[in-house]
Amino acid sequence: MYFCADNQQRQLMQKFVITLDGELRFGDVKLHKNLLPWGDDACFGGGMWKVGGGGSYIDLFGSSYDFGAPDFRQVKLIDWTGVGGAPIRLRYLPNYPDSEGAFDVIV
Image 1 (spheres, rainbow, N blue to C red):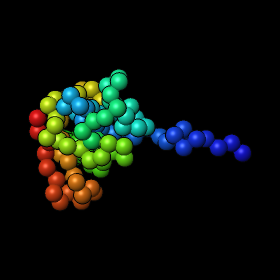
Image 2: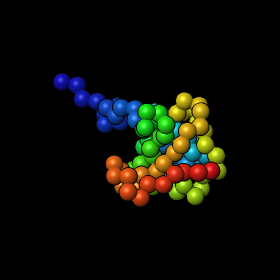
Image 3: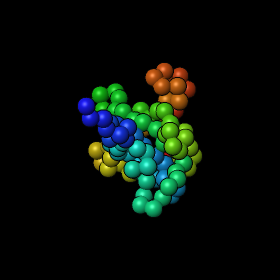
Image 4: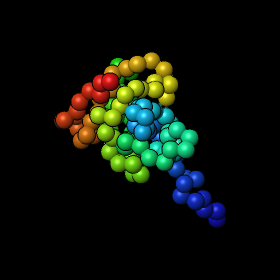
């Protein structure tokens, strides 16, 4: 029987990070660090995302195992290429999947 290393078994997931330059980046990656600019090894947190409301918004939730919870106060710009290229409403759900305490992320 053949066993893969743990990191080879992980599947791509919808994740986001806030870079040290304040850029909110989205992507389908195995690890949050795969969304960081070349040479960076830190960020202002991250989490997961999913499209909701029939495509009318994106829910952001959770936190990065490596980088912690997102600090949305640091966001200066949003790179929309990882979520289809067009701006859309963003809302953070700190108690996902419960929407209590949810707030819009505005730049």
